[in-house]
Length: 102
Image (cartoon, rainbow, N blue to C red; front, top):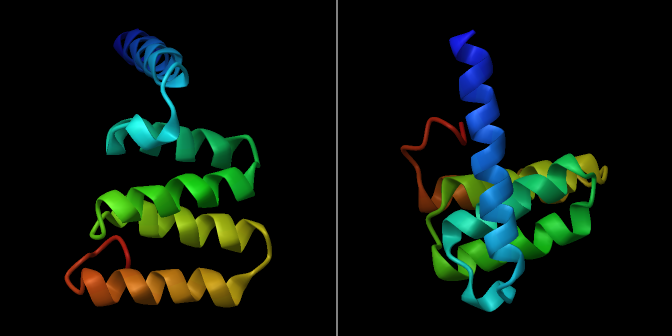
């Protein structure tokens, strides 16, 4: 029962964040807002838009592990395994201690 309530609250919080973020241009979004959009685009199988968003995150925060993983996932889903591997390598160069990228 508690898990169901927590899941519902998470969905509502995500929906509110998307609603608020939709009214802003991408250039004015925070990294957290951009991450929500990037993950949404991945779930929607819109890999090109996900790549745009995750790239924007790295412009703002060049050491954002989630953006490196998001780019690798996006290119992997498009079947471009070489570019996916390149993003993991770039991430490890920036964040050699990251357990998420290893």
